[in-house]
Image (cartoon, rainbow, N blue to C red):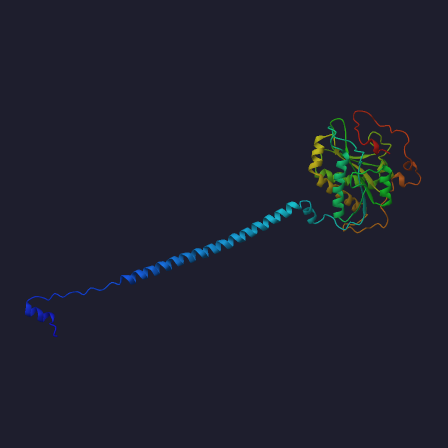
Length: 336
């Protein structure tokens, strides 16, 4: 079949031919399938992205929780060992090769003095501070002989005998003071012969306590309050350097407050004063090495003087003390 060209058609019919445009068939089903596939791909990508983000966040959260848990655990361990953490710090001294006798005054039925209300007993405070001193001395390597470490009682001669038999190099008796009036502060008592080693021990302890914080520094005292011609028993019958520390007035609110707030610091202060004395008098060197082969003796004490028998004989008459208003009350059973 011959098909006329457009020119031939126009010559024959006098017009241009009208040709039908063949419409292209649209495959809607294919388009729909393609759209469904595209949507599926997009949804898959979104889910994959969300999963990755979630994974990253989850890891970070887990790591954060681990850190927080470890921090909480460390904090809990620190809180439950508040006392032990002091032992984790480097000791101020170490390997100190000497022996000290620590005497917590009174005990058991002998309560010592009391506060104004009569509810706070000296014996309890004495034991508290004695245990703190023991803790630091032992941390420094010092051999500690405790007169008592519980609510027990020893007579004064038993206390001195225990220290002398142990060949202690120093003796420190710990007490609280009392007065029916407005007096506060810390003082340390030494034998009235004013021995050099004993005085050095008292000064070092008192200076360290003052650095921690006390209401008043009442200084080093000699003999016995109101009667300097006699001594506290432990300062008379111990052969080694000794002192009796009156750590504030239990009858004074400010001294009780300071005692309670600084108990641990007071314990370390007393211990540091003892160790410093051992170094000062040449008992040990700075490293703690012992320099003296024999027990440290206080040569100026009458008890160590063969020409004197006064320290070996107990007083049989009641001690006379100054009863004027400026004299305060201390432990009446501590005299010798």
